Image (cartoon, rainbow, N blue to C red; front, side):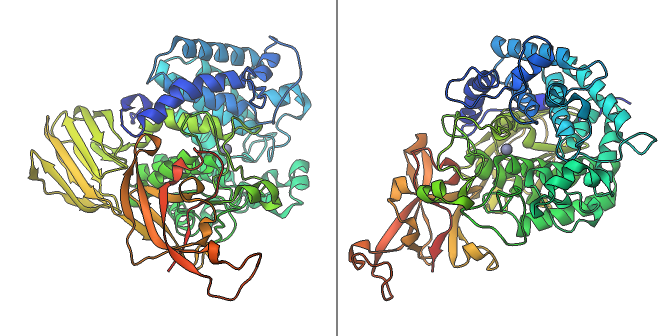
Length: 636
Ligand code: ZN
């Protein structure tokens, strides 16, 4: 079968006033920086060991395995990011680093195709024995994604050849035949990677293995009788549901367990639903989507309410200061949303993808591009975060690297691969979901079509979109739920359009240029009253951006402020961070000068005075040193 033509990462190049700096940081700084970190050459960063582990396996160095058992995945994600970075800067140094990495991986691979440095070096006799926590399939998944990225960007299939061998071995080891292991990965990832490889190469074997793992999750016993699982599962947070293995996917009513695992699983399952056309799988994903986005997601697009188990908890449990909201989980949510859009283009999916990308994902990296958050809280008091046991995962400052470094290369591959999130295609219909400036090229059945977008988002609801290509191609432009008075003009004249699931349908001719615009008000949002921590509070959102208050602008004791909801938030252009739109929230604040001296408690009401808070976009928080930050303000 010929490879299916879809929108390749090579087809869409971002060129956008908001994102260029961030992608530039990723390309110019993060990719070379992370290569040094992975090679243990960056002073001040926690040693990674990732490249060294492969070198030892390859016989190119001597020593012992270092790092976590899933350390290989850090190098894999870096390869993926570095491959995408070549689309923006064809750096000879990065090409050489990629060559070196692939050469080492080729030599590290065992004759039978096995490739996992932890088990090769530490426990060669225990290969495929700890499926629940061994991460062999997870690491293979990331390396397969890296191989597809390298293949798509550079045309080199060297790493893909390596991974084909590994996948063949996995197909021999896992299955329902005699002597095979009936199981599914303890940490999902390879499912979505296999689907990527299938679409890139057209090889059915990739798809079949993905479907086997997806459909077999929740089958008993799977890995539930492994000694490794039994030991870990003594803790209530590490039961079968931690791995989404408590039920088959069609029987899962709610998103359970480790949030990154869940997001990667649902992403792979949505890929599968698209390829098989199975309506029951699609329905299962819609049910889970509704549970996550209506009851278990933070306003920032973060998921995972608890550090222990890095997991979903129960509906409406969204604590702001002890949350986990891992950068990787928000990336996973954006990945899942993109697959749901491929299944069915609905504005709701695009809105959640955008919410995750512009808030929780972007918060994961500093403005300088070299410091990272793992956990992205919505309320921080640094002294508390540094002391309390239940805040132990919360860093009040971004750090240079982590011992468990899943997030930094994940955010780098997301930034360098951002072009992949803008469009989806259904036959000769092109859907634009995000107004990010770019040039996209599409091989339609009618011929080559090209879209060029110049955007003022997220600061202003405006984009210019020019089409060149054959007639008969449909272009669907997202009408954002938050955009009021959405209009499209051509040469100054209004263009009428039909609306389909939140998208404006256009049938452009070659050379057509459209201007679309919509109003974006800064708005107070309130949470469902069942969210304990947000009840009686409000936050500000404008367009895709959620705002927060920081000590740097407002002084300490942010929680002593109460917003007056009858006064709409006011926009202001600020020179901060090279020019951003900030928001002023009016209200009152407890007058600390009149608070009785030395009193812990005093008769109500506390003396107040009129006050206003300056709010900055959430993704920018903690770029001016550690300090208090809050998203949800007291409100009346
Ligand atoms: Zn992570």
